Image 1: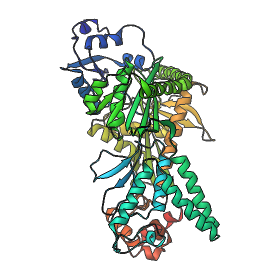
Image 2 (image 1 turned 60 degrees about the horizontal axis):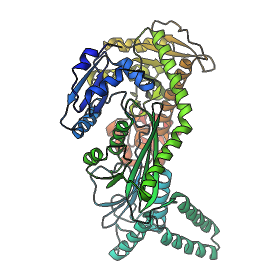
Image 3 (image 1 turned 120 degrees about the vertical axis):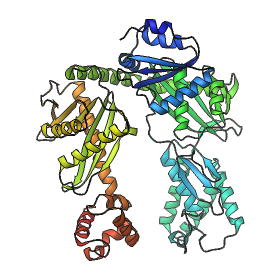
Image 4 (image 1 turned 30 degrees about the vertical axis):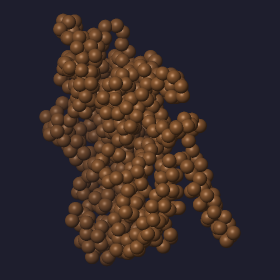
Length: 587
């Protein structure tokens, strides 16, 4: 670690944002502080462990920007994090936001699942978030089965199947009484606010009629629907006896781990909860604030009110989000804040030993890898694999790991050119496209490229990397005749001395399994029902024009699969028709 004592002595004791840099000049961490000097000194004095230790080992320099207030420093910190995406700042584990249920406020309303509640939309009633996405989908399905709402995004020229099965009133051609629609909306809103009595009564009445008519299959279906309502919309038994609507946050930290608990209070009931455990760097309360800015920026709707413990800077968060922040001192709401802390503590204690063990194993593996490769830094690793169908229709996948942890937001899929007929050709194309983009867009370069194979695969990677003027270490994970990883080879085609029982070997095996799974799943998605446009994208000889013509002519994957070669030839050439016909037979 460099000696920063002279530079630290010049840092002011004012608020601001600081940026840690690696030896390559890359910003690897952005933070904020009320007192810049004290915060920066804390990194370089005393004992640091875990994630902080990795950060400190990577720091080659630091910069700082003084601000006039802590709010300004928070805004600057978040701006810089978004701009540079530093590797050591908080990363939310889940790359998807929680779903909400939206009832559109249109002449003919639609009920649907939405995730990005920040995008501009017409007036709508939003309910959620639903931490259980399956519960949200079931809820929407139940309501759409019971109430004949509009199902299509755009009105058609004639009624569709939903009208004939009595799940739509035929808004496209029928003149619907606005009062009928208004009554439906009121009942649906009541249900989504937690009162299932009206819908349950409707289902029970229909279930009774079905039973009397000896339609037992329908009666059983309705009984299952009632059970779904009970399980998917059941609220936890915390009732505040007031129509409160807010999010409540608390946290618990121990041994460089931070457990954050969020309660979603809707209509005075505990509607749902969210927990995440992360590694802390210096100050847990600052990490919680950074976490919340990312959590709500990811797609969650910022609540009108936020309830916090007194340990957090409520005024800072209130000013940043422009909302009311409450930090209760007594009563039911204080008890609820304490309960959130207890839940955060329980989550951390249940997982802490596993997390500590995994972190220790990763640190050992990283150090072993540094020694084997003779490098000072190895954190970001990119690995590639291809998938194909009988030697054709290739696709590629790339997974990214930082310190042997998957970075799923950075995974990438590749559609391979139609004229590629072999694994090496597919890999050559994927590698060139990836690292040409890295150069052109100044994206982060990996510290290590991990190939699934030996000399041949490593050779292709070296050829592409060299042609682009890059210098990135490459290793290959070589499999035996039973397709199990046998040994690890470096880019000088030397077998590395890595025991199969070592942590390093285990972590590389995980990377290999993950990239293989990712590439295979991509191919399966393309072949899945309804993915017609994706299917057409990978069939040789079909470009943008032909794809549109086929979509227009056949309309669905089912109709396309039923088509003969002669019918396909009405749209595309004979060779392409045969290729497409053969491919579709394998779906």
